[in-house]
Image (cartoon, rainbow over all chains, first blue to last red; front, side, top):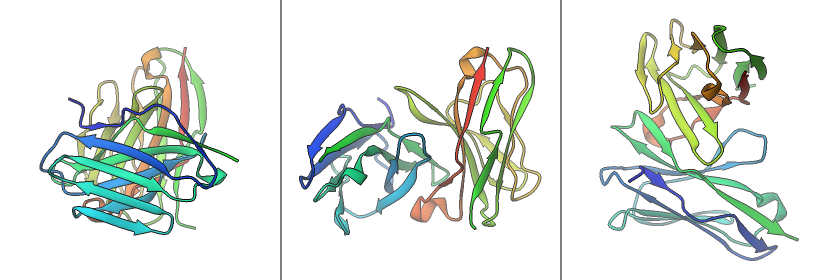
Length: 111
Length: 114
């Protein structure tokens, strides 16, 4: 099993709708979880991090963590065309020495 | 301006010709790392460094070398490049990876090995 899995294909959402992205991880000892956004041709940038079970909100973004199910999700409310990007889930592994990334999910917001 | 600078940004080379991709950060970060990004495979870590003179292998270290003689620099060396090392490479640094997980990425270096 891969350390971090993002299995959904490209996600197309109408402008103003909610985009929902999911991620599972294999290391039950993982403590910190992150969402990065990568625009086409650009480098990744951090948009959210979460440590505790439950929800964490930052503007239009909400990260959700369920450690029992080893599941992290990202909700983007009121999606805008500028949200069109690839979203990478990342998990801190091996005692905080590195981040393992999922393959990413492409989001396309349709005006 | 706080940044991670990689050079070259684009490079086409031939099999077996040694090359170095430089990486420099001006944020006094202790942690630095190299990733490669390939379609369908995502970001995979090559090497990382917790501090000067401390380096360790990531997921895909074969065919690569690194060094960390100064805090700000973390070059990636391909001693004998092969076509399967054609990829997009990112250098990244972090002040406290274990806390916020915020990696600051360079703009990327697109390498083609013929």
